[in-house]
Length: 303
Image 1 (cartoon, rainbow, N blue to C red):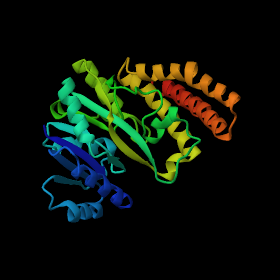
Image 2: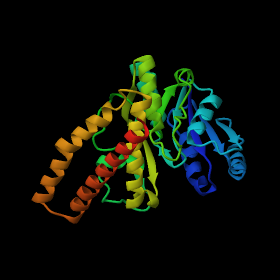
Image 3: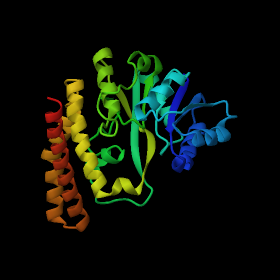
Image 4: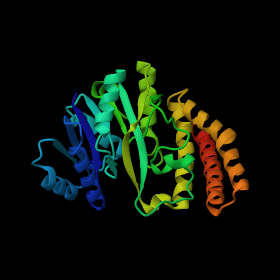
């Protein structure tokens, strides 16, 4: 089973990170791996990528001279791929050495049509302890409340997600939803919800298929987090409109927040007060509230 891993990149500022990702993929414990490097809208980066990996037969390089955006980068990679499996990751992510092996093992064991794994944060500028784990999905990491054991889920995150290539192509890839790309989040959610409706299957989650996602300093700034939370709420409402009955996992997470996580945090804070616990609780409540405001805004926009 051949696995093609799509790694999009577009900025020279991220070139070293991109190389770290590609090198990790070329050093996997699973041998039959093809790296599909998609360079979007930057000829300088394309030249650097070609100079660095152009002679490697395991790396396919495709340059797009227009800035196509995040959605098209993934779809272009799937078109260029020659593997049985198309795996998606980011140029700021570093897969564990057995990541592809774990994905393939899950495909073979479960006969899955899509497999995803766990995203763990790599705190580039130091851990931001005030960010509650329940909202780690805002920074691109697997959050508290997501399943801890292997099981079928609606979707995992786009930096650690894979599909059988024929399924991905038949679905038409990730769709432009009519929402401004800068506003829309979780585009892989729409694809996986559509896949579930068409094939009756979700994504097989393997928590041992690990990818580290670099968390740059700007992703830990409170203003950035609150803005992202707002658009997260908006996107969830938009997703409900585009794919009805696609928000069960969000509803389940909300119940966990209201019935378990928030009361538990309050109890621990009262028993053993600390500034970190207080900051996390305040941030959790703020992010939850702003997400709700974004959802209400989405109702107005998507009536």
